[in-house]
Length: 362
Image 1 (cartoon, one colour):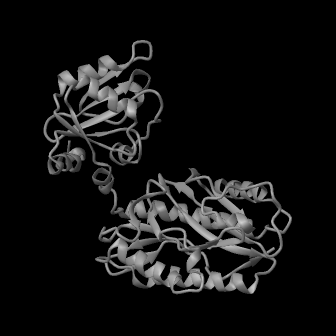
Image 2 (cartoon, one colour):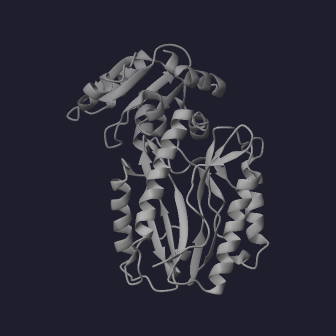
Image 3 (spheres, helix red, strand yellow):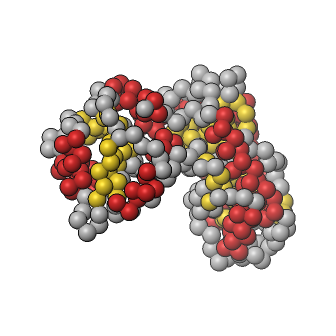
């Protein structure tokens, strides 16, 4: 049962009897298989010592059997409900305290555990549990690079076809097609294609609005490949770019390059954001700052480490994060440039390879 060793050690370090995982990125990392989160609870319990156990919907038993699970499985059917399965788990595996994924476990699963274990102490150990996957393995980095290469090739196809008069939705549709054409297994997230004033909204939605000559056209997109995500942003200009657009773009690019210049093991997430945001703050466009520098990237699009002031997380080799400074003038336009960066033993490496010089398309 060596595959559970780090979770057992985590339970001991947290001072709890066990760690529970539900379907999601931590479950997939451990068990190498995903299950849907729906109205049917599936819970894996890993005690600090002793046998593991799981609650599994009966209709998933055949799929769960393929995981080579070594512990006791308590299944249940829709017609009966899951309360008896949780009660059987409690008889089999007495617990006084349990660490759970606070951002993943749903409230009704929490309630079912509390009903089966009166007096159980449940702690939110999201950061600690997810922290086990902060440092990526070579295979995980290779999968992420595959997702990035797919994503970059897709955007190159789209940029060659962009013309004034096309709508954001039309361009978005073409980008999605290109991502799958180049080998995406899924979308890492719904892409953002935003032009003109819409580009000033960091999480904009594509509209049925034609792109105009002179517009900033922002793409935030990524493929999923091998279970890992890409997350890239490039901002281009359609037809031509005004002087202000050039100035804003060069400011954002300088901030982006600052992260590449300084990132190395031993610095904190605070250090990186402070340096990058400092470039933006020293510019004439400081009032356009809306976001932190970035976030971790891996099995999820947003995970640790979060690159923001006040975060003391020390960067270590194998960590991957997004470097995405931006400036946004509401009602006018926004510029964001985002790379995916790997912390190496002696510095960093950009997993993203697309050019970043200001580009005019169409």
